[in-house]
Amino acid sequence: MLSLFRSGTSRTVISRNFASSCARLNSTLAFVETSGKTITPSSLSALTAATQLGKPITAVLLGSDSAEAASQLAKSSKINKILVSKSEKYDHYLPEEVSPLITNLLKDGAGDFTNFITPASAVGKNLLPRVGAQLDVQPVSDIIKVISADTFVRPAYAGNALMTVKSKDKQVLVSARGSAFPPLEIDEGASVPIEEIEYVESGNITEFVSEEIIKSERPDLGSAKVVVSGGRGLKNKEEFDKILNPLAAKLGAAIGASRAAVDSGFCDNSLQVGQTGKVVAPDLYIAVGISGAIQHLAGMKDSKVIVAINKDEESPIFNVADISLVGDAFEVVPELTEKL
Image (cartoon, rainbow, N blue to C red; front, side, top):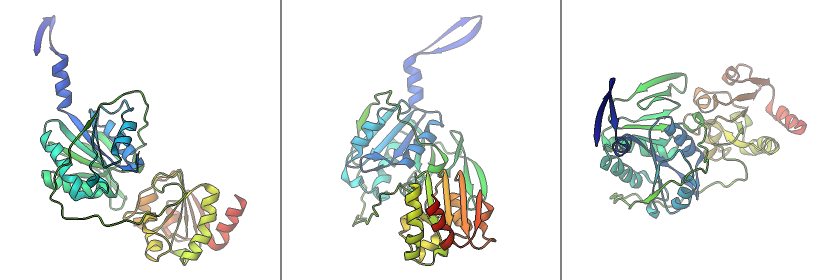
């Protein structure tokens, strides 16, 4: 219902029901990943980016453990609605399974959802382009700043340039870099409605076989406040562990590595930091025996304090370091660990 009245100047009054309908026709769908029964840090960061779009947020959680994670998110006053599908076919986030559901939600609610956001995680990087192709929409990946609901800043050329990108599509699809946005704080001041949705048949012929997950008592690399990383300068796996583990234990730090160290078999590839690994921005990043290739710098140069230890004073890592120590890592790091 729309009513008009005149009082000196013309004014328009829109009834509450009509205004509510307009808000619903201009909202954000946010894909939220879970690890076990908890929401991943990168998803909480993506939700913060979603709030900056300035539109009502509908979160979608998938998998057999999604209901418990949804009940945690339902306490947030920043979320307007939560959709849950508990089908175990979504447990491993195969993009062939997940993308038909997301596409279906965006198509069926073509007027409802003007924006879609996902974390720029391995899952998000698999999912976003597939959804974009199915909707014939150009996604904007790895955003680090929201200017408006259709305009964003994202890095290019391994972080050496920043692009301001404006989407002209009716539905704007983006992924948000986790290190660029603080995690959404669950204020526990609300009771958000949770709606269960059905599994969407995908016709998928891909089968999940198995996974090997490295379990560690150390903090998660993607969300740790302190990261100690090693490079090829540590020579081999034995020296890598011998040098880095005691230092990381003293600092309560996560362990990372350059691609060269991972390719040489010093550690598992889940610890790789860089353009083709994880992007981190801890309070303290200590690079040991890392030369500082452009691809590695792209994954860690947003750290608040960077400490570089390398015997080659010409190493590019020193160009971004706040504290530079030229010396032999096999002598310097054990002494540093002992003094700590």
